[in-house]
Image (cartoon, rainbow, N blue to C red; front, side, top):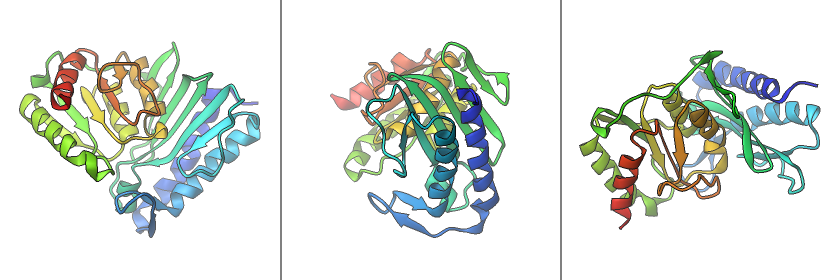
Length: 260
């Protein structure tokens, strides 16, 4: 029987290989909650690869997936949280910024997080209490201390009712930071933050599988992950604020100012 981290890495690599070999071909897609929320055949095929590997080794584990190929089990201590393509819209358009995201939680707490970018062959891995790595090398968040020196990232919500609020935040951060980026993959954006390539990230209207793995990677790389008010992250809340820790309070101040 494989150990848990090894299994997560193997599953990410196998799913990622499928995506890498097919993303340039152009894909038909279906709509889920709205015209911005897409799903392709490769979301389903990649998910099937991951779920099959997990169920073969650990059939008693609960699995929560974006495309719903299995239903979570309330009684299981272990739960896998899977996004087969985080950044489906990018994938569907042939834009090379997306990732496979796999997290494992034990009794509600993260123990393993894996985010794999198959186009650049970058594997971000974290294990609770053991640190975070990129392709086997330790990573750490940046040491930037002010918003004025920061590269901050975000993503825009599917829910149109949230867009005005998000645009107001975008304007304030545009004025206060060195630069902003809209990435299209929350898991990969947070993994970049963990590797010190960016300094902060916020987003609304997320699902558990969008942030479950990357949140652990950021924490194990020395960063901070909370909700938008600075409270403990709740995967069901739909919101996340991640940073190198040094600019976290400054980001909360901007986000809270727009909420008042």
